[in-house]
Length: 354
Image (cartoon, rainbow, N blue to C red; front, top):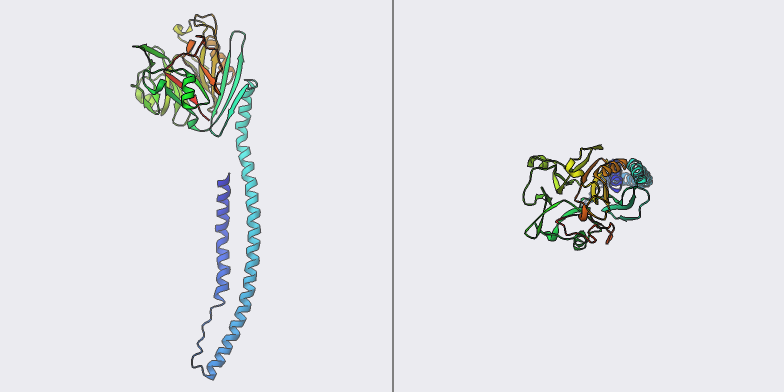
């Protein structure tokens, strides 16, 4: 808003500058008289007297012009202050009106989640924590507004390929205010490697891997928007300008429509879940559902997750690693109830910063 007002101020001063310059020129030009008195003769003295009278008249006129100019400058100054005040009011009102649709939409989607049980607000991020209580499952939702791109990033376990750590360890190590588990993993020689294509700081970790067995990539682009899906060629993903992202299965929603869940991923029917989705204004919604094990007796089904996110107004959604991997850290505490009884060591995490 300040920049708009400054622009108007500059424009006003540019408009009045020629008028002020003309007034000043009139003052100084009236005072310009050249008279030589060396070896003056009577005729020359008469001429000098005449010139003196003209100079005196000119000074009188210059004085009147100066006074007029001073009065004009005062009037301009008053008008300038009035204009600045008016433009401040106009810009403030315009800003409020411009933000009104966003505010109304945010209230609408927030009302479907209920009252937040905790929140984080800073210049970089707004994060609100909600409880999810359904007849067949319980958990938590975190709605996130990324005001700045630096408010979210992905990390590798212990910052190395094959390394692993809990989400809490990653949060503490990076000084984050919140964090969740990210993609799936494969074990080998005591290490845990990210499953499928993984992107960190705009670079591919290990290498690009074409989608297989229904795996889907999910992450943020360089503008801070949620992107994802199946990519069978590196150029397909490159066109999305990924900044970071991980891989798991399946892709749940596309533009508000349910996608077919592969039969293999329908069993076990119930399990702890972590999902991530976006609203049409690019806010993120993360859901972490509790369950006491991975044997199908507790937690939520993927179909239930699809329906719940549609009901909440989510546009695109992806399933992240679940079961004992599901983790939600908010303001330094573990919010969910990990099914292993403790947090699991994982190779990738999504972190959020103030």
